[in-house]
Length: 94
Image 1 (cartoon, rainbow, N blue to C red):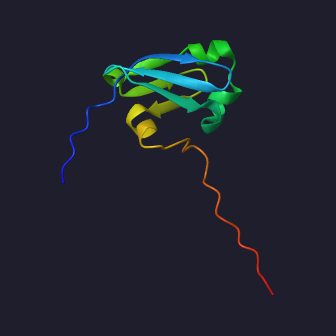
Image 2 (image 1 turned 180 degrees about the vertical axis):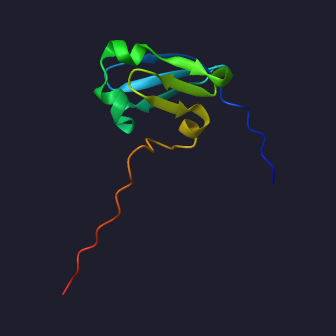
């Protein structure tokens, strides 16, 4: 089965106390917790607002905090990939 997916293109970004909201060209609005992106979480409100939309809407960029986010990846649930993922730890049972 084939699915046709419209390209997700960002038009505007806003923030509230704990989330980033991306308005897409097709009218959707995507909310993402800032906790998913530690650089944005730790940034000042001024640094968060200093974003650029790149690639015609496919990317989000913050020069001062060195953060780049792919809009399509957000829709797929991909979060911050700048830090190594934790490996699950299993305890040994007797």
